[in-house]
Length: 56
Image (tube, rainbow, N blue to C red):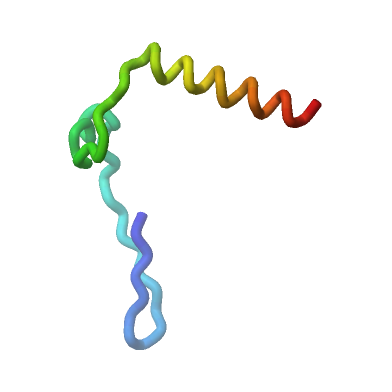
């Protein structure tokens, strides 16, 4: 949905057909290379562990 405001104060609602997530693959340019699933999992574990240590 897109809301548009007109000059006379009215608001128009524009419905747009939703795109499937698979159709959006590659729509945005990558700013850095993907390190791989294993590297992402390791980093997530590290960040999660650090956050838990600070709470204790």
